[in-house]
View 1: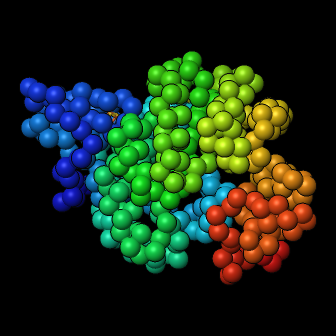
View 2 (view 1 turned 120 degrees about the vertical axis):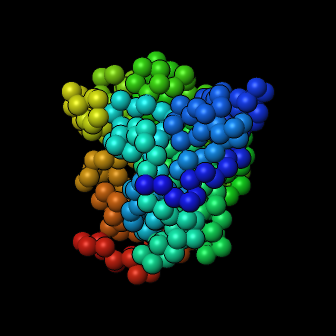
Length: 355
Ligand code: SF4
């Protein structure tokens, strides 16, 4: 299905001469001859002009808790209108959304920026999220949705692999409210080359720091693939980067791998492996380290770094207890926990204690 919006001109590119253009949206910087696509398949050179084929075409739309992104320290307990398109600038062999991210056919249902925001409001969402595939490749569409969302009083966040260009960071950063940057396999270069088709972690580091400089709330995730993508040294290196560049209060999520796509032969990440890496990250001085995709595990909770009390009790994406005062200070010792916002007053999920 195509829409009247499909030939929307891209802004992130530059002419190279001879009809060629260079896309400047992500760290691949594809040089694209006339009539061809970039690596992500959705940015095409049409007569020396780069167009975004997926502008206004949503492959997936869903209402999610913000905790699913995962964002644990930004507007907790709110719902977000999640939007994905097709294509990606990475080729993760275990992608959980391969049917859309590795799609080479431009498809989706029309969703203009105005319609996206109307949908978000209709479902009681407080924000819009760009997720499921890499939003950098449709940055121009995302930016238009974000501006519409802000006009309606909604926040906006990216779930990104961080493989952005500095140009994209500077285009999107001033408008984005929050981001979760996903370092896979702790960003170890050999893992990225073999399982992701990315050259190395440097662009991801620069994206996280660049977005933070623009005032964006940053959380870091690290998906741990058992045996091939688990390394104490790599996790330590990443934790040090987060501590020294983004700050020790940056939430750091270690996520459990599930077999998917072309890596069905590996098991889920053993929980002791995640616990070991959690201890490594904590040992490097990070205050808020979480385990993800391990429902019911005590390391889903937020612990006060000062007194060790459970500040926020969680079960999966649900907040079960909120032990912070009106200024988000620990009720036990008064230490301020850097969480932006607090659950809405009508937040009463099943089996939760009153907030
Ligand atoms: S977004 Fe990245 S992968 Fe896609 S065309 Fe641009 S540089 Fe290439």
